[in-house]
Image 1 (cartoon, rainbow, N blue to C red):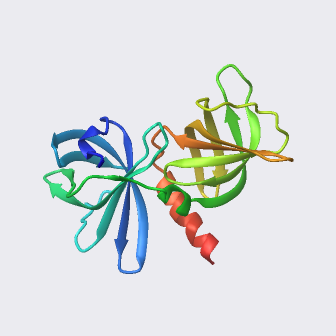
Image 2 (tube, helix red, strand yellow; image 1 turned 180 degrees about the vertical axis):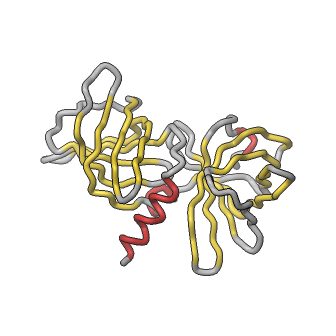
Length: 202
């Protein structure tokens, strides 16, 4: 059974995966208002002043609901209408395992905060547009599925702040890996991931 784009809640974050020839970039966006069954007003996580034009590119749209099962819509269109961006879908979305293929390794220390507990320094394993993972080498975090946390870290030229919910727990002999779905909108995340990807590929 396909997934309807208009079922996404307003103010929910999505990711636009944009391909042009051999180039690729991910751009964050937010669902603002559904205008019809296949047309949605969105805002882009883009701070530039120049109007973006999406001609001659292939665009997929990814949404990761809180149940952490990513949904992917292929070949969507972004239409410029006055001062707004409209997203048009041509087909239903399907479940996707795309999350794993676009994770980039981080290996950077950050600060993890839970409500009512002091911040703890953790090792960030990887991050994507929709999720992140940390490594608990001391097995001291004692997180459970559904727990919510805040994560803050500095890397390259960016200060990244994420809100996440535990959706995966991998227990190993010497450590535990926690996987999170991202719940907030971080405007710097697409640029950070793209820069990190370029450095990893070198």
